[in-house]
Amino acid sequence: MKSFINVQDIGPLDKAMAEAFEIKNDRYKYQHLGKNKTLMMIFFNNSLRTRLSTQKAAMNLGMNVIVLDVNAGAWKLETERGVIMDGDKSEHLLEAIPVMGCYCDLIGVRSFAGLTDREYDYAETVLQQFIKYSGRPVFAMETATVHPLQAFADLITIEKHKTVERPKVVLTWAPHCRALPQAVPNSFAQWMNAAPDVDLVITHPEGYELDPQFVGNAVVEYDQKKAFEGADFIYAKNWSNPGVTNPADYGKITSKDMSWTVDTEHMSWTNNGKFMHCLPVRRNLIVTDDVIESPNSLVIPEAANREISCSVVIKRMLEAL
Image (tube, rainbow, N blue to C red):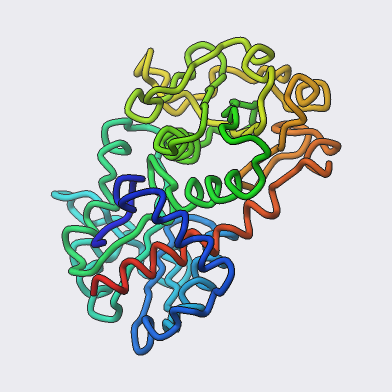
């Protein structure tokens, strides 16, 4: 595996899931694969779970780890081609990327959407430069449009906690005070569509339609209560307007409807549903205290499985070196 961005990159999903549970039972089984190998983790944006879980996964596999926070301690990097670099950016990615590649065997990149230029974001401009110029295998630690390590961990969590053979999984929009990217919901929808035994429903206000390439075969239901009825898992997440129905709205907040906040009444519509969220979460905006603290909340096991999903991806890449 030379790059990991979408669910198709992981290969047969049943094999990846079996590998995940194997590693979950013995996290150090493949420690020999990473001996004398180095992972470089490059962060253009803040991180907690991704930074910790990815570093832990690499260490479990015997790797050395270099963490570069581009916004703290590194030269400011220019990402656009053809610009006159007479501003505050001292180095261009086109030089920085191959230099980074000299010091490592694998590269993980975290770079969020700018939410101003949909074409630029959905072309994955920054990530694609790393794939093209680093000379190393590259995996996404959340990009402008996807967060595959999170979605893989979400699927592991659902598989572990499901009580029916084919659960109903609902991805629900919830309000937020800031404009957030679509990366998490995009990947969640993509991975749930790829899973052979999941019924996926996506619910959100009209105008918040995700890109069709990620929605896939999911049922889109604008009535949140109807969507929640009989659900086994509720995955709450805010996203800014994807600009699918109106490109001028891309990256904007076009709804702050607090009736979409997941509370006890919402969860009462489900089939004793489990609550999920990728974290960090704005309490009493996305979800109320009583729901996230309930016995049916899976946010901590979900976060723990980030170590497992990343371990599978890094293992696959090490095996391909």
